[in-house]
Image 1 (cartoon, rainbow, N blue to C red):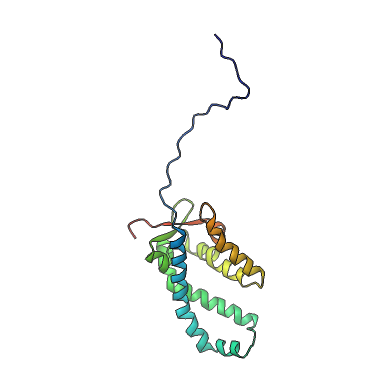
Image 2 (cartoon, one colour; image 1 turned 90 degrees about the vertical axis):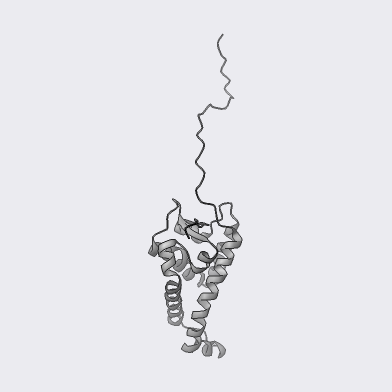
Length: 171
């Protein structure tokens, strides 16, 4: 007997089970906690610098900071960020907050990302873009809200081709 061909039958395929991902995604709560810790550490450095530089006096007088003052503040902030987090980011893909909460940044292959591209794409680019009036606020909000995507990758993760995972036990 011949088998009849059903033109509406689903095609037959030999499906291979995909290997499970070796890393579990970091929880949204852990990511939020890490950002709060990192922000507190950065504020502990940048607020005294802003106070000593007279930036607070200008704000109290109602003066708008010039573009040069804003760029200087951005560069000083970035320098402080790298001094605080640079070693951990370069070697383990972690900031101090991520280290304390046992999560880490990895590229899409699961490796610690290259330091300079990671810092430029994940942090510096977002800082510059969010400094743009109106548009920056919208992009900053979109970056925060994108954590609720299924893969928990924020806009800065998408730009840098990274993700945040639970750190392996060696950390």
